[in-house]
Amino acid sequence: MKKIVAFLLYLWQLPQNLVGLLLVLVLQPEGCFQVDTYRLYYASRMRGAISLGQYLILNEHYRDYNGNTELHEIGHHRQSLRLGPLYLLVVGLPSLVWALCWHGGGKMAYHDFYTEKWADKLGGVVRC
Image (cartoon, rainbow, N blue to C red; front, side, top):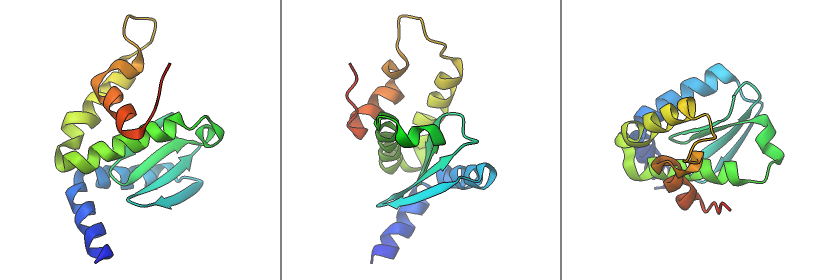
């Protein structure tokens, strides 16, 4: 039964799972940890962090960080579980564009954007 549920979850998140798998193949992470419904990868070739379906990929330097980045990405994973095939349109693409365009110093903090604030909430991140 557990394998059937895992298969159905993979299908439910298929678009982002395929992109995540491709990214894992390209980045060739140094470490991988299976946790419930996702796999956490550490890759030195990854610039920041990203969550695509069951694939959470973080730069190697986050391994010994305060944990907020990992929790934040878990929040994005939970968004993916809820939204399924809509995740890339509702969260993934807006989040990516925001990450590429945000340069700091403005009135809005990076984590004030709706995709990021929601991921923080779902991941249990508390920001000061």
